[in-house]
View (cartoon, helix red, strand yellow):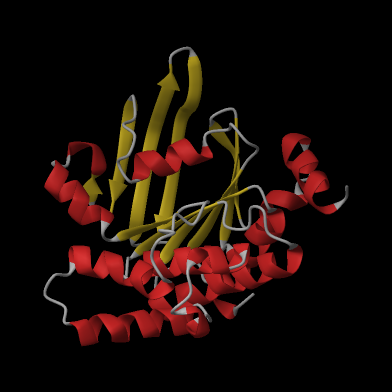
Length: 257
């Protein structure tokens, strides 16, 4: 944990969500959610599988449309944007997939260069190479530059996936279950990377997770979700000192069993 964990975020909202509802048929997934993410903040959204965490992320980046309510990202009402404007907004919001989503036929160098070639057509080959090297150094994997995904460990793939998201220098990072499937040592390394990304790239982040160790390590605030809404929001200590109901069972499952 770093000193930035103790920052108090009171202004400069980069994401503002109000009264958000989303259903699929008779299944009510989000039921009136309110949430703010502030500039420079890491916010962990905690919850069991099926509580709506991933649906929330997809609505934030416009992959799904809410039934009602508003989502404002970097001052833009996501639901009212034209496709070109939505695409431009998405370049400022990095989405780190749970699966890493690397191209198996490309080397690490090519995987990282791909978003730059597609979105920054004015960049020279030298500029692209330099940017790839900077990001690989930032995620601690410069030696993997000519390797293919099949040659990487699960933890390395996750780090490269984060690197490919960072290559466009997004203002906001969205992490979907970053430590899922990783051993404790590799999880710790990834948690430390998420903290360092905020420091080095000046990002604001939402971290979707059911891993309390991840939340405690990386987040300034945590928001616990159940049945489509938040049952507690605050610092880790504020939320889990209450030790009641679902919050207590969630804590016990992670730290006692």
